[in-house]
Image (cartoon, one colour):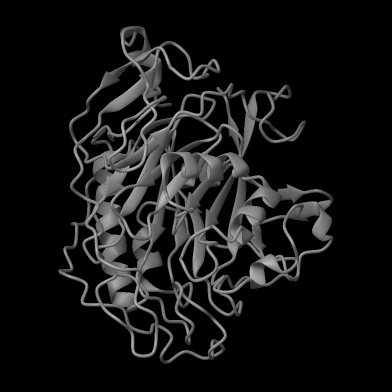
Length: 429
């Protein structure tokens, strides 16, 4: 069983601080900015990173499909399944993708922040720790130490987020969420925020992570609506950033370059969940242009995972894969590091699809075999979803179980995806 990084570093880490990393260009004011991935070197490096060259623009990925005949809206573009991604080209008859392209992969490594002697943040805005620079991964984004007490999680004996008393297990609800709405590829309209509030996730792998002015105070406000005092990481310099929101402390975070697209990368966070293993959560938003491009992105990400994530830790990849089917090549590629086998999450009516028309499996939460063995049913109110939930508020009954979400939220303008939730009960020993 792998020892946590924090378990053997904390005695050394008595002199430093955790800093709240703010938006791009802002001085951090409160803890912590966790940025560097430790290159554990323990995952076998098999498969090379594919540099697929420049992304010449976005095209319609649903051109030859059935069932998705104009009702599915992708990435702010109101046509038949077209998503505008790279910000450098304009689809015929669609909306240009939000302006100029920014390459987020060149930010200076901010270092790795460790708590001193405990995995519990005592509630102050400054952690008693020290900064350790692993020097192996580019960190470009904002990691926020929520400054609130994080307790031991829950098992089946109590609500999520409370200390477990029946055997030392923690119940962790993971969610993939590309739930922006309206014309700005952001969460300002509030539909997606209400959906997340309704299902109370512990860790969210979020896409198009924009809110109001994207300032540190605005992002803090949004995260607090999802979980008061939660930690988060949001990649910087990206037009439609990926990110991670977590109940548990983020002890490292950053982004790995996606060579196929210039307006976002792969965002990752190392999360200090209860127990001896950490959870690595990776938020992805793959291209719509072609299955071959998506497979190139998957191949590149598998290379990063094998080079940086310890075998003994848990791994979750979540987000908007834009996959047309469960047999796509990118999913087969991801099978090298995660378990992609069914059964898969469904909605209240037993339906799997996660795009707007519910015909295609665009969105996923996939985990490694170490974590998959601990999957348990997702229970919300009196409802049980044995293999996880596809969150479509239009068909969810009773809607009171996911308050404050509204029946109409999943059908909001430019709401192109459904949330995906899976639950795991991990040992604290």
